[in-house]
Image 1 (cartoon, protein in one colour):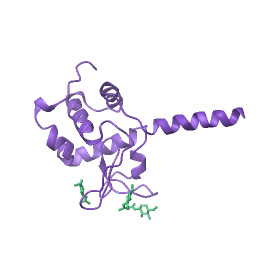
Image 2 (cartoon, rainbow, N blue to C red):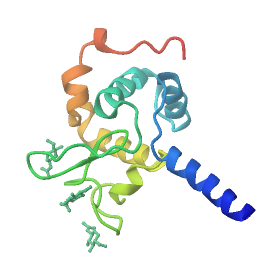
Image 3 (tube, protein in one colour):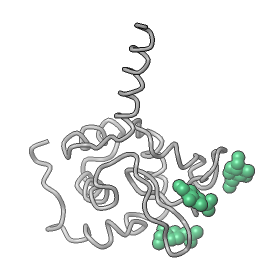
Image 4 (cartoon, helix red, strand yellow):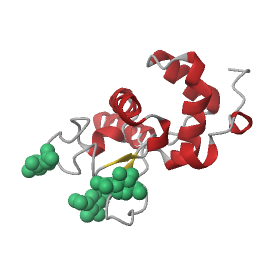
Amino acid sequence: MKTIYLVSFIAFFVAQSQAFKFTRCGLVRELRRQGFPEDKMRDWVCLIEHESGRRTNIVGPRNKNGSFDYGLFQINDGLWCNNSTTPGKGCHVTCSELLTDDITKACTCAKRIFKIQGFLAWYGWRNHCQHPGDLPDISMC
Ligand SMILES: *[C@@H]1O[C@H](CO)[C@@H](O)[C@H](O)[C@H]1NC(C)=O
Ligand SMILES: *[C@@H]1O[C@H](CO)[C@@H](O)[C@H](O)[C@H]1NC(C)=O
Ligand SMILES: *[C@@H]1O[C@H](CO)[C@@H](O)[C@H](O)[C@H]1NC(C)=O
């Protein structure tokens, strides 16, 4: 009996944590821990806020070309992650690995995309974060 309670207790928290949403400063702390440079921090926060609303587990609506975007950085399955069980494509991951609470793999992939394409790879950044006045205030973080 006790074991069953413990199991459902743990299962509840696992389910909860899969719907994780960062606060703005929580996100900044985590991005610092993941080694994102301070001089582009506001750009990354802006990008993430417009792409995913700081949620780790969201899959975007189907794009016109039939692809989907995954997780905090809304990374595309046409190019970067395999929408199946074997890690693959540009970031050598499965798309579901980009939806977890532990954002290490998503961050590694986002840095790789950035290295190749820059911030222009993300419509969220292109459309909402190009002007310095657009960038979020993180001075309290
Ligand atoms: C499909 O469209 C999405 C969103 O517009 C874009 O990010 C992605 O690069 C495209 N994928 C391919 C394989 O062209
Ligand atoms: C990718 O996954 C979605 C659900 O997340 C599914 O509906 C879609 O058919 C898959 N796309 C491809 C190209 O396999
Ligand atoms: C994606 O995963 C499927 C299923 O394991 C595999 O057959 C396929 O080759 C993988 N695709 C890529 C591009 O790695």
